[in-house]
Every structure is written in C-alpha cells, then in structure tokens.
Amino acid sequence: MNIIADTKALVTERIEEAFAAAKADGVFSVDALPDFVVEQPNDKSHGDFATNIAMQLARPAKMNPRVIAQGLVDRIDKSAPIDRVELAGPGFINFILKEDYLMPVLAAVQAEDTRYGASDVGQGRRVQVEFVSANPTGLLHMGNARGGALGDVLAAVLNMAGYRADKEYYINDTGNQVKLLGASVEARYFELLGRADEYPLPEDGYQGEDIKETAQHLLDREGEAYAQMDREDRLEKMTVFALNEKVEGIRRGLEAFGVTYDKWFSEKSLHESGAVQAVVDTLRDRGYVYEKDGAHWLRCTDYGAEKDEVLVRANGIPTYFAADIAYHKDKFDRGYEDLINIWGADHHGHVARLKGALTALGYPGDRLTVILMQLVRLYRDGELVRMSKRAGEFVTLEELMEEVGREAARFFFSMRSPDSPLDFDLTLAKKQSSDNPVYYVQYAHARICSLLSVAGEEVRQAKDIDTGLLIHPAERALLEAIASWPEKVALAAQELAPYHLAYYAKDLANAFHTFYNGCKVLTDDAELQAARLVLADCARITLRNVLLLLGVSAPERM
Image (cartoon, rainbow, N blue to C red; front, side, top):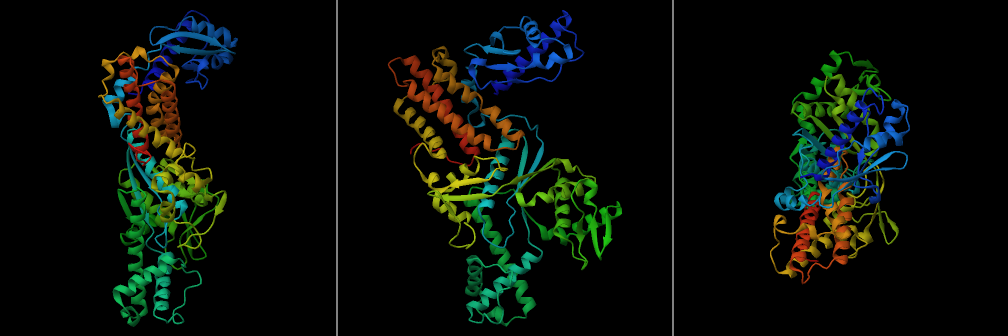
C-alpha cells in the first residue's frame, strides 16, 4: 500500500473536478488545465497536502489567484478523507485530512511485511546497473567502495520499485594495463629470487604490496620454474595467474562488503568474439568513421562530444573506447531497456561520446544514464587520512572495513548524493552514540525489539485494535513516517538516488525515539497498550526494510 500516493491522486482528481465545475460555472475562462503541483508541505500548519493550481491559472485566466482559489475551494468535494480545505497566502489551497486517514497503513505493513514499500513504478522494465568495474591490477580503494555501496543499494531499490534490475561487473582483462600487470609481477618474482637487476620494475609498473604478494604466491606454487621459461611464454602465464588472482580478490572483497553480481563480463571476450571489430565496421559503413594519421576516428562531435575519438590506433589495435561501445551494444542486445553506469567523476568526458556512438549504431543512447561520483576523503579525529598500510597511496576497502565495519561503511557511503564529495569521518563511524547515524538507526530497531520482548504479549492485528486511541502528536508523526516509506522507495528509484533511503532511515528512527519518549507504551490501559504496540511493531518492520535495502543489519540487541 502507498497511501500517500493514493491520497495524493485522489486530491488531484478532486482538484481537476473542481476546475471543470468552476470553468463550467464561468468562474474563469481557460482553454486547458495547466500543469500544477500537489505536495505534502514541510510545515504541517499548511495542511496534509497543498496545491499551487490557482497561481498556475492566474496568467491564462488573467485573474487574481486568490479569486481563482476561492472559486475552486467552493467546488472541491470535501468528503472523506478530506476534512476541510483552506485558502492561504497568495492563492495556495491547503487540504487538511481526517485524523484517521493514515490508519489503514498499519494493517498494510503487517500484511505486506518484508514487501512493505514495494511498488510497480518500474512496470517490469529491465535495467542493468554496472558499477565498480575497477581495473584488476590492484586493490579496491575508497572510490570503488563508494561505487560498490551506491550500485548495490540502487539495484535493490529498483527491484523493490518494480524494475527488473541486474548488477554487472565489467572486467578490463585486456590491453596495456594487463600487460603491465604481468611485467610488474615478473619484476617482483625475480626480485624474490635475488635477481632484481635482470627484470627491473617497469617505470610505470604497479608498486603496491599486493603485487609482491602475488609474486610470492606464484613462487610458492611454482618455485623457480618460471625463471627458466621463454620470456614471452612466462609473461603470458604470469599475466593469466595475476589476473585470475586479482579478479578473485576483487570478488571476495566486494562480497565481504555485501556486494554480489549477477554477471561478471569479460572485455577480452568482446575481442575474441569479433564484437569490437563488428562495431567498428558498422560505424564505418554508416559513415561515422574517417581515417587520419593512420588511425580510424569516430565523429563524436556529431553527437555533442567535445572532440572526435580514435576507434582503432595506427598500429591496428582497437582502443578501449571501441570495446566500450561494443560492450554497451551487447547490453542492449541482451534485452536491457535502461542502462545505468556508476563512474568516477574523472570519466565525465566519456559520457557524451559513448551515448553518441550508441545512437550512431541505432541504439537508444539516451537510455544510458551515467552517475558520476565525486571523491571520498577520509578523516580521523579531524585529520585527513592519506596513506594506506598495503597500497601505499590510498586506503583500501579492506582496511576501511577492518576499522569501521561493513555496515557503517555502507551506510555512510549511502548518505550523500554521488555528485557531492564525501568526507568520511572514521571516528564518527565507530562511535556508539546517537551522533553516529547508523548506530542511531540500528538502536531504534533494537529498542523496538526490546520493547516488544518486555511487553511479553503477541502483537495484535491492526484490525483488532482501536486505532482511534492513537491521537498523540508523536503517534501521528510516527504513523506519517511509516506511511511515507513506499513514496521514498519510488522517489529513490525514479531519481536514481539511494541517499533518500539513508535520510529516511534517520527520520523514521527519530520519529520512533520521539514517540517512545513521549508516549508510555507499557501502560495499565490494555487497549491503548495494544494500539501502541502495533504502531511500534510497524515501525520495526519498516526500519528493518530500510536497513535491508541499504545492506545493513537490523539488530535485535545492541
């Protein structure tokens, strides 16, 4: 049940009926109903819903908006759930609903349980969310962690809102970075053998401790056998070994972070299948490719990009861009209707050219949405944290989880819009106090579980209690918070903005704490206690559902 959306639709319908009646009565002369807004005001003194329709009609009707508003107010059907309608300010129309209009939510929460909040907003559209997709040449860092949390939560939200969303990781397992990985492992392998001077680390080689560990693993498994091989054969085998180890390490790291994928897609497979060359050929046949300086270029400027881009280098090797076009074509060919990529902000220049290339191929480039993430900065005790123990240049996902735990990390990453830089406070994330948002929300859930345990009685069904007893402002505020959950899920899905969930979780927890502190739940009044226990249990169910979507546990004790 989404009672907020249903009631908003009913209020909108009654406004439209009043408009038609006022127009027929000659209150104003307007050809068509203009766009208008029906919303829930932040200030509750402005009612449960408010509309700006009179201001929107003022210009086409050439009338004072208050006169228009009064004409509409006089004709609005004020039967349930509407209690009264008021004209306010320059012409706003405020709707005050009957006290009990939200009460059916309690029965819906109990009945829907883990599915409370679900909707059919997505109408079954197939969506693919690709995120992290870090080069398998090192350890996962804070940007990968933020992308991992955002992508995982976003896919969960989309599925809750009626989309069919799959999660995918694109493995960049070919190209220069992979060759450099093999050469870096080779250098560390010979270093372990005391022969570093024979194969020094390439100037732009990978220097992390994890590369040394991979070389050690290779040495432990194969001994000095690789040192006797032909170098080309050795590099090929070392590259495969290192690549497999790195991909598996990424997989394990993300699974420890609560992130699993429906598919791991190999870039190399696109080259081996001929998909990359086929894309280049198609674009050439359509007249979008030209040759310059021996290379083959795509006319990206035809589709709004800042400059044209190379598809095939002068040496005949396709670029990463060519493979990326083939990859996204493959996504559409698999039946996905919408594509969502989560990238670092430094990839912003790639967006227009990729969309343009897809459009040039005849695919809906506008159905690709790229969410660009800003940087993460870590702070401890007010000081910027710069270095990693293992990576040397950045703090790894593994180190972050060791320090603050998976759940705090996921919640903190979900609290901000990805287009805003994130200052991650390690000290705050470890605090066991109300200052720590994830602790505050989890504590609310645990507090409800404790309350229900102490009550020592089974929570009754909402239909069997007297909901008319729930008249305290804190009770109504908690009920409103619970009722707004389906709207928040739909909003987060439609705006591709998981941070709405984290904000909602804090608001719901605050509404429960306020209710708990202001209303004695365990009381001598058996019927009032039963009603308040139902309200508390519905808050528990809703809090649990929010936390599960965020990938955070809902503890019963803390």
